[in-house]
Image (cartoon, rainbow, N blue to C red; front, side, top):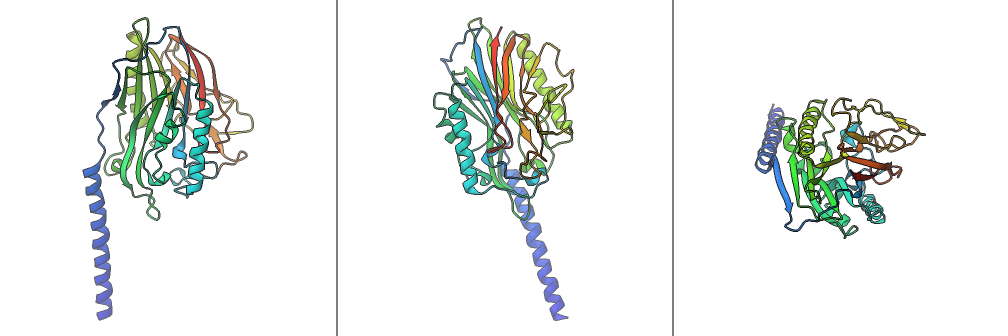
Length: 351
């Protein structure tokens, strides 16, 4: 009987410790929860670059997967089992990502997503500063979309602290850089440990008195569609309003959904047909969706990359307002060696 009482007492103490720890975690998460404003001006300049209204520009978009989702990696959030790639691999990924960007530093505007600045999953490397050292001629701006002191999943090996966001690097000095918060969240308590999605807007004055409005976006990936729909409606209202007042609008990034009327023409790659596809009537027909149909920009990370079995798709692309046109758009076939995304480059002319 005494042994039974001791066992019950130990179990009670264990339950109290576990429950108390959980309550403490939630309370601290509530206190430290990142609550961004709907609109936050990150940068302003009194002497921005003034661009010609018939300028041709190049842009690159790339979700670098925080240098932690290389071709050998699978990820638990997507059905895999692993949480973090080895530190040597993470450093190698970041080095190779920086090398690619340095080799392409003639590109005017670089949109990056999943750029870590102090996360356990990327060994607390400041990837933003590391990349900036490779593209020194570019004006940088960073917007947080993930700031959590401790992600408790998976329980056996928690992902821990995450500080991450999106970054835009520009050959020209913008008049302003503004973070816009996307609507929608996953509710309590999930949202306390989740991303606060956003898009980053750079504005450049043009010689015709209008503005070039560049949008770096990273949309929701893990909901059933309602949050994505709300985000897309919010973005739609924003870009249509900018176009109505005569501005030139280019949006690019990781949309986490395929472009309207998506028709892949991959050679030797399996296509992920279950990925959400945007509605064909999302915008008036004169708006242009620019993507490379011959090369996948993203792979599933349920397992390590295997060209013969891994499904791939296109979720990284550009949206152009009717007063622009593009000469080409090309996805660089890097074999998902250092990220689960491939970079996409486009050349655009203002009309």
